[in-house]
Length: 115
Image (cartoon, rainbow, N blue to C red; front, side, top):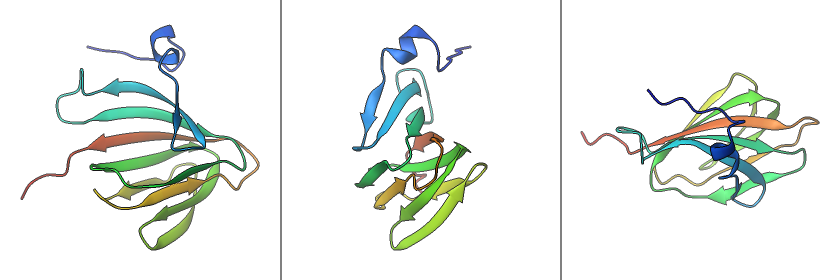
């Protein structure tokens, strides 16, 4: 069993800037995971944006706190606490915190299944 907490020194030591506007911490990654690429905890301050980008894997953003404007491909939608957003592999996506509170998300990434 591996347990990681956002407040652990080893997790905090790995804080990084996420696509221009967010701050993220990698909780688990491919060094220990077998079927997924990573699980990260991200935070956007009000007015900040995770800039539009494309990843070579699929992701799920899960909003833990706050709200924002999510763009995936040609679609934009307001998202809030409790929303899960699926981002297909290779899709351009961004998240703007246009609310008054921090927007806190979990990001899960995995390679798509081959059918």
